[in-house]
Length: 387
Image 1: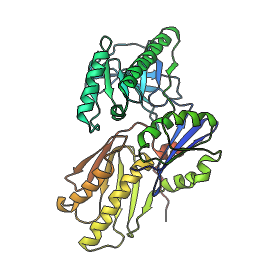
Image 2 (image 1 turned 120 degrees about the horizontal axis):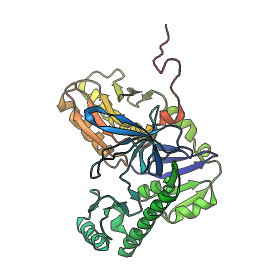
Image 3 (image 1 turned 90 degrees about the vertical axis):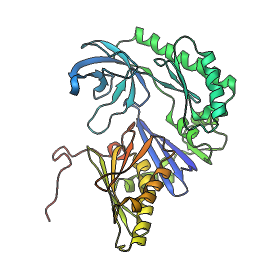
């Protein structure tokens, strides 16, 4: 996606980030400062031990949020946790609270920097598969290995190959110091307690889209200086924020189940607890050529709606017309291309036996619907109206 503008809007208890491309609003994210945000590190207190399927064990933990978080006793590369009620444990939010479910937390902490990810419980140096300059990635990989202190793990991010070697080494020191500060706080504070809050997500958005970004709009002079550290383009300070750029109206439109297509077709998007179901209506198109055009337009719009609504988990799509692979291959290719640079890591699984195209997208933050609506307490969302 070629983002052109990012708008930041802050109020008393939350802040929002809106990303625009040439078509309009492409992504929007709302962060409630009173909730546990993805990436934050907490000293949690074990509330209860629970038995899971296949003889596995998990824990409900108190991290100071309004809903208890879930911690799996087993995590790859870590010794299985054996704790009891009342004990404290250092955890990181891997998945924020959504709908009626609390946050998901892990013990395997990862601290994300501009060029590196510090992994205290890993013992290897890896680099992002998105780095095209493999020779330089391997050169920096050797550099980081040489600068490792004891047993520690690192991941070179895509931006690392654009940095100087001195910047890489300096960031290693910075991230180690953050982790040491987390450890010190964990020894002195009582659970539940916040040990580390990740940097303002605005900076991560700016880094992600800086190659195509033309301007960043913020509502605070302090943020202007922060953004300057990662962006050399135009930075505006405007108090109106979302209102000035029509973000609120665009969000209301994005909450609608129906999305109209220019071809006359439409999308019906249903978010359920099990999956997201999307149906493509051809809008009266009958011959193969017309239906193919509707499906290709729908594929591009579906990729856009996935980002805009932050749809996640299993996404099942029923396209119009025949579900034979020869008709669906071009559609699968379009979806794969449109979602190739998705920061939430989408995977187009292909065509199921039932003729539906399936996508799996990592769930890290609540969907737009979860952020702006609540389930009806009377009917739990199952209500119907008699004609």
